[in-house]
Length: 321
Image (tube, rainbow, N blue to C red):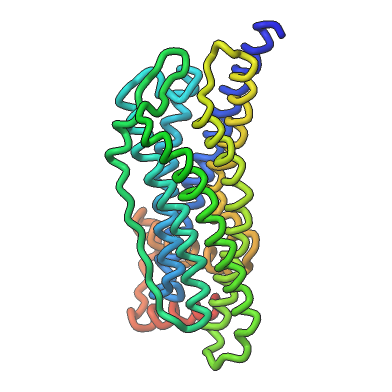
């Protein structure tokens, strides 16, 4: 094959990475911000541990998108993610990226686990703590290859533990297993003596979580497989055909993986009519009046505080039904 073909393919990979990154960044920032607002502002979700985990996941996604946007900017400038040009960024990227990835993946895991126990009326709070500061020291820039793992022990860790287990098989198995158990529990929820608001909330959260888990598996699995391959077999530019093919596959699967940090809100809004009503209520009944008031656009109306709080509480209960 001619060199022009390789050049055109690499240019396509660069353009695809840039534009898909911009779209993912914009949608991710909007979606995760609304998720945080809805789950934190509605009284219905206060005290609900699944909502707490979804807020943490959205915050982690929110921060991850800024790291990802930095990669997109470097890609548009240098044709790659910039790790081959800046040793500090080579190390820093692999401190921040794995941290937010692990937090997001295991917040999804904890959401499914907690929803399973929640539908069984059992209290079980789990937390995650991950420290990846030392991992940056294991990456260096090598000629022809770029920013790669320079420590043999850490190479074994990423090859056999991090990609295949920590952000690969383990979260997939956990989320799939407990989401199915939670779905089974919800199908039997009629037999339990619970308030109707609580039963409807359990059904809503379980349905949203099951949809989230399905897309989580579909989006992250291809990229993890690709990363395992690239980690085991680093690609040199000397083998141009293999380099171009792997770069193309990696760019496509990477964009799928980044979508995992974006799609949560949009899956919830599409799959749950109640969540649509709750989102509409938070935006137009809570945030918009305050924005109008802040911009001096609101009429000088005096509403009794107790009446307003009572009305808001009734609306939230109505939205939960």
